[in-house]
Amino acid sequence: MKGKIILFLLVLLPFLNSIAQEIQLKGNGIIVNLDGTNDPNTEDGTLFPETPVLSSSTNSFTLTNLSSKKIHIDRIRFGLSDFYVPDDGHLHNLKSGESVVFDIFFQPNAAGLKSTTAFIEVTMGKYKKNFFFPY
Image (cartoon, rainbow, N blue to C red; front, side, top):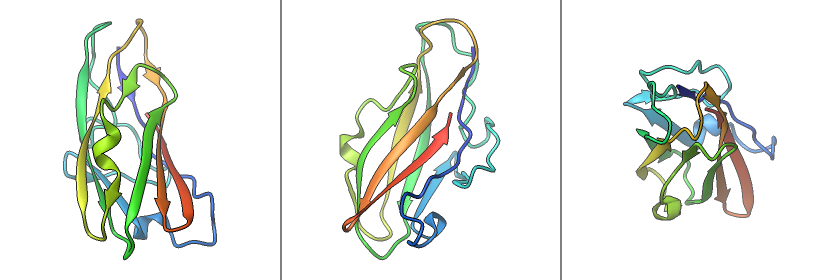
């Protein structure tokens, strides 16, 4: 059973700057596109390896604040319970230029290919944005 993420982004407030100028996501040191053009692959961690039911695989990602403002990461959630971030509480505040590493776990509950969407909910000042990528 494999799990996958296809990365793309929804900016709720289109009059703000492009997300590519505000936040960067890397998996295995490779920039993950946040515009929907990313194909799931093992190189950037968006495709999990075969994982037996009730076992788990982990991929690490680095989130960097490229904006000049502090951002608050409200939470990271998924459309399927097979994917999760065990403790996203340490991700909350990133000053300009700061990065944080977080793990996404894939623990399939049943056999078959799994796809979901990962939502990264971010607040910059008084504006909220959702970044999401199918996984």
